[in-house]
Length: 395
Ligand code: GDP
Image 1 (cartoon, rainbow, N blue to C red):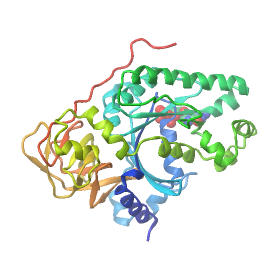
Image 2 (tube, rainbow, N blue to C red):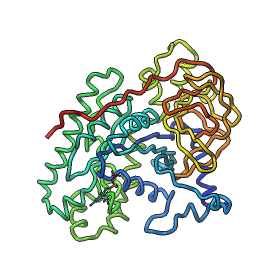
Image 3 (cartoon, helix red, strand yellow):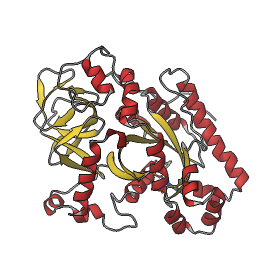
Image 4 (spheres, helix red, strand yellow):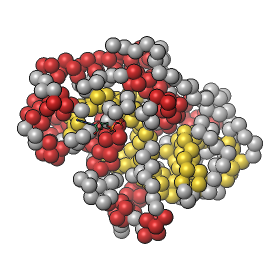
């Protein structure tokens, strides 16, 4: 069996195990390293090859697929990650980094349950960090923090341990101030502030592909002092091999972000204001794959061959080809032509996509980003509020 086929089979198997799924977004101020980190995660999990080889996936791709020219959709990628002797399916939705895309950022947040907030260690939390954290929290999405570009503090700014610690603590304190300010008003979440001790903060270098967290220190035996020494001595490749960033970040994702079964009972009342006595309310909260189909469309993309592709989160039921579904705000039904998932960054057609997953769907000609698509007529999801950039910025 080809390597690609094996990965697809494993993703399909994991799609039916909601406890092993994490739907996440990476949110960052522009240039803080979101793209570099995403590449790391894909390379680290073997979804794309690192070190400049031709991508392994492409090499294994069927000839006809190569001919039709696969475009990597950087916006949506799925990968598998083993943690605690169990494999997990991580569906990552990219959020546009530019202020103009605020609406898209919020839409992406609706499809996920965890947001990895990336902050540049040198620049610290910036206005757009605040915007993305607010958007995540408003949607009931749990944050964790990755402080990037730590290599620059060590090698470029030549900071000593004390100075570095103060700087990193300030970043954490600033992010926590934002989180505390928002979550104090929310009665459906516990304390969502992040901390090194809890393992909800990781540090590293997306450029040199190493990372560190409390969890990784225990596993690798490398503490911050060792890392500073190795980075200073230019032993970056060794550092990457000993404590690869993708493991550090994905372990944190699996351990600290809720799976759909944990997340949906809390999130559904927040984003859907229909009658909570209805069966469909319970089906969405329980991630019932036998329930009515409910899909929240977060994005419409264009594929040169397949046409319009709707991407969204399946909250209940199981999506299958041939289903006739209602699209909120429009009359009549649309017929599903294909369902798929994003494997690596490529769309892969599958037989069905059950509740708790991110699906790629064709045939929903009337759907727009924000549509509720369902097998019974229902109250649509709440419209998504766009949060604009804060007018007053922090110093
Ligand atoms: P995005 O706008 O958040 O997607 O940021 P990018 O991933 O495109 O990174 C912006 C710039 O920062 C690029 O020039 C990267 O090479 C650089 N960069 C990203 N991560 C690191 C890092 O860990 N260390 C250093 N020194 N540079 C980095």
